[in-house]
Length: 286
Image (tube, rainbow, N blue to C red; front, side):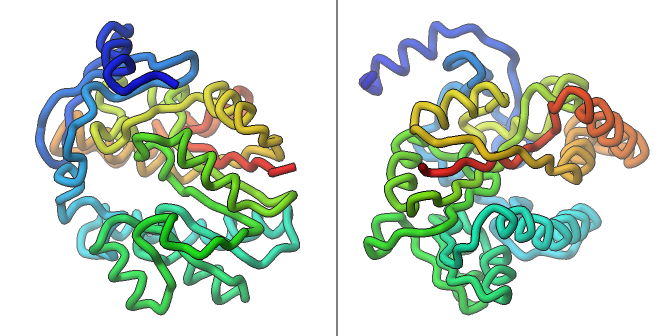
């Protein structure tokens, strides 16, 4: 294992792919560097990451429905619940689910209403309290859960936020039943919308997104944890939403027409390349 100070030195010398701005909170600049083939890293990683989430506009930690952007996000999120549930239920007959990075608990609430036995982990206090108000059992850390195993563990746009993601994946795998399903959704930096928007691509989301993955990068990570690939599922709405945010990053008077067009092109190109804006990866614990 590489010691933290040595890892820092390696990243400091790593190739700079591009430089990005934190458009949400600090307006600070960060670089995107190659950590290893297929995996990029935000540099430097702030010592106090929590302050970069302290914004009313960080919607995944709220249930805000005030602006057009909020309403689009909430609409897409709700529409995707049934699709995610169908994907999962096609691959398992299990009924115990852990959502790691559960946010405000809406996905768990949806699955609970489908007779799943659910629990979540969410470190953000505000998001966790909103989940608890919905009657969803959510802990602040994985270690707070009893030594329970699950049929399915999901991480919806969470892996990219975790500093020690390899360690966490090892812990999560230990909580999976044999033939259990691990579902990980992350942005794909090899998508067309990432290529088109470059440093303005909203899914860089520095420094909250510490890691940036390609499909090859995800495959290498999962193989190193002895997990077997089941399938990939495109999150086709993400390209439109990310493009809308990216337009805003480029210009305060964001073009909704161009955002829709770029999102559509991204999905059309991905039909032949597989390089969708965001992808849900399904892996089995054998």
